[in-house]
Amino acid sequence: MKLVAIAGSIADESYNRKLVTYIASHFAQLADIEILSINDVPMFSQDDDQTDSAPIQYLTHKIEAADGVILATPEHNHTLAPVLKNVIEWLSFNVHPFTNKPVLIVGASYYTQGSSRAQLALRQVLEAPGVGALVMPSDEFLLADVRTAFDDHGNLKDERTVKFLGSVMAKFVKWVTVLASMQEKTHTEPWRQEDLNAGNPTDTTVKDVAMGADDWVEQAAEKTSAASGHDYVKLDRGLLTVDQLNWFLNTFPMEATFMDDNNQFIYYNHFLDHDDMLAPRYPKNVGNPAANCHPERARDHVKQVIWMLRSGQTDRFSMPVPGNKVNAKWIMHYYQAMHDADGNYRGVNEWVLDTWPIVADYLKRTGQTLVATPDAKADATTGASDAGAAPAPLTAPTTPATPDATTGASEAKAATPLVPPVAPAAPAAPDASTGASEH
Ligand SMILES: Cc1cc2nc3c(=O)[nH]c(=O)nc-3n(C[C@H](O)[C@H](O)[C@H](O)COP(=O)(O)O)c2cc1C
Image (cartoon, rainbow, N blue to C red; front, side, top):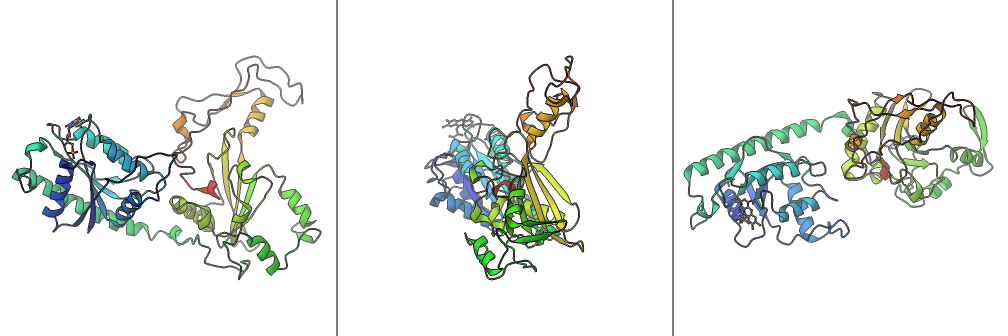
């Protein structure tokens, strides 16, 4: 078993480094433990992304390749030291090597509580979304009074302490093994067979055109002698020219995407520029395999959604996804399975729209307003509830209603201005659930 260990201190004579050095040599029979240095890690700043720098890449790769991680934390002012928190910030920003990684926390400090508060704080940090470590529960190894704990050779002096540390290490090794076998089992789940690299061409796949080409549309159109402009296309119930079809599709008040049954992104209704879209995409993205449209962290979720649709578990899946438009209130993504006449799955129709204007219009015309119920269950998938704004039921206005002067259609009109619901809190990382907005 390969483990890596990090001391959360950059002091020359760090006791926590002493502790991990001792663990690595004393328990070498249990696991191969490599000590990683954090001395060169720059100060985290979101404005100066140094994820590609050597120290961050080194830590990322080492942690990713390891079966588990041992973190030894000092206690500074009753919490973990900033150098360790700094490392974790880098490793939960654009890279996420701790995700599902078994972690053992240990710690050494001067005083009797021996890093207990720092360990608690570190546990909380490691379990935050974006970090996602699997911190071993129950046992804590606290090395108090550390200034007298080691002999001149760097060995722990107290036998009972060594014995206890041995039992914690044995438990950790066992735990890492159990988690690894569980993860192997999970890897046999059927949704994992979804190939986001579009490696299973179907009868509509355009051959011999690179999916990643910026001009895939132009090349594929030439290859297939595609209809264009004034050419007529016979549809299920109608006949349109290609121009008419474009006018039609580009005036639906939503962003629509076609991903075919080979998981290749082959169309979107391009009526907005990238920066004006709720789910931004560029014209050159068309033709890409789905893998190119979603960040690594989102791909398993994308596979799960596609598999649900392909396997017929559901025909439609929907979810709110905070997008890039600050004034949009409630952006919904809908994923609809498409089928041919014989019922075969032929891909996903994804449409995205801000549903708030529809709700606001309804409220205005009917004179109702939104009121949150105290015990409303919030959407656990998206974290939308974090803002404290659970989807609220409609209730009648408390003030007397007056007829709607514009249409007369509604019986009532709100006497007070309508207040939109609080916009959902954006997840820490955009589109944490599916990455769907990253097309
Ligand atoms: C700013 C500062 C705050 C500290 N706060 C605590 C504390 O809250 N609890 C504690 O047990 N030790 C505290 N210490 C002492 C540390 O336990 C001690 O410096 C320890 O050696 C740090 O680990 P290291 O040698 O691996 O860097 C503090 C030290 C510093 C410099």
